[in-house]
Image (cartoon, rainbow, N blue to C red):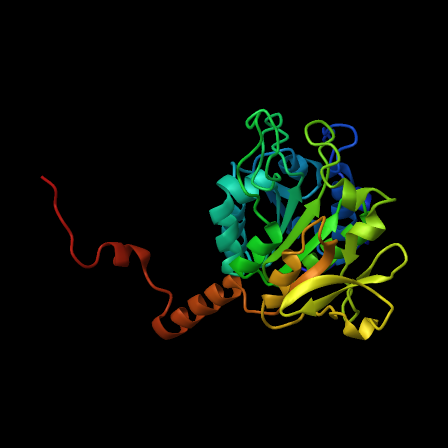
Length: 341
């Protein structure tokens, strides 16, 4: 990745802790996410001055204040657009976007889509709690159908948007999902996103203890999780369950849950490969919703494509080589002009 020149002295997590008081509700999953981001920034070995954290609006978007790097708290939904400008202007920077399900997928949906489509070298961390927390509990684009909130007292009649399917449809070159309640897994996923060269999209399932408590209880509760979460491991069959006796196989192009035994073995199951060249497999995984299926977590897809920032600077270099530096004032004064009386 760009900007990986190490500092002369080894940094620690404390070096990435700012002097600002962290102000989230007690029990909010954002605390765990912040801690892992600060840890991963050390592990990536990037100079602290080469990190830029950019956010939009929402509880998650306070995060740039709490990380001792350069940062920019921008406007609702526009963080990917501003981050694109930062990365194109200085490709040596490691640019991260911190956003929420409402910020990224509602007002910012178009910006998020095109940042992924263009393969801008950004790390987009989407905190998904299925609610608008900062504005006091309205339903969001990821809220489940029928969700009763202050803005949908009789139950939402909107069908929810699937963030993983959205990222796949936009053509992101790195797509992953993790849990704020599993720091070790979350740290691994965020680090892999940080090392990816291209558009990295990470959905982080987390809780809003005030307005949407237990949003993902089936996936986060220690007793329920083994039977409801499928951990994606490269090169391994899709096995899950407290007894590791259930799996996912393909039946006429559709996934199905099977119990191992009675003639069904691991050789009958789908084997996870995030490096498949197309996104069909990613769409298949993203469509696996609870309660019919376990919730997949891990790296869904990754591939290496040239990035927008790299191609733009290569194009500029080629233009300078063939046509010289150019003269902006000469361009502005050339061609047709008008004199207004």
